[in-house]
Image (cartoon, rainbow, N blue to C red; front, side, top):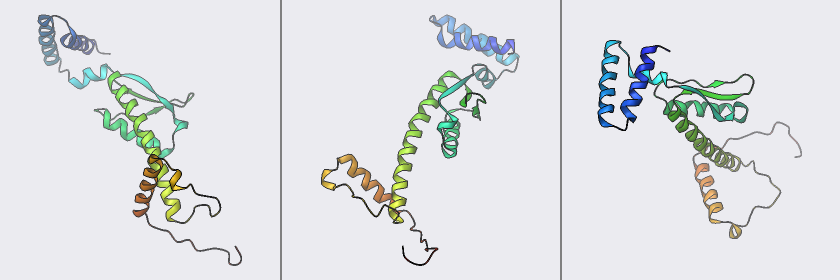
Length: 177
């Protein structure tokens, strides 16, 4: 790493974290002078603070759609274009970023992956019922035995069905079924 950028990084830390106000002010002045003299940008200093971080999930834990979702989440958190990297040996999913942005990205990924999976389950059930693909044999649960959460989920499935198109499948083999 460039020694001037490393110095700017240290001065920025001192300017933000020193306990004595005069020390913070002096560090901020020195930082401004250094940045101007050597044409150092804020982005260069931020890039110097980045590390490689591993998400708590592996690539094999995710569908292609979920990887796409994670890419979008990372893009919504990081200020610059940050590509996901996949470890060849361990299958881990990594990004190069600052510690604070990684914590935010990881938490946001875990939150929205869980919500995505919940919504996908609602969609799947709605699609099955809309297209009359549910098992013809078997018993459904009695509404009187359902919890409030189960009833709310049924309402969500029903609302989702309203927005779906019913597809018509034409039997390929004629005769008895």
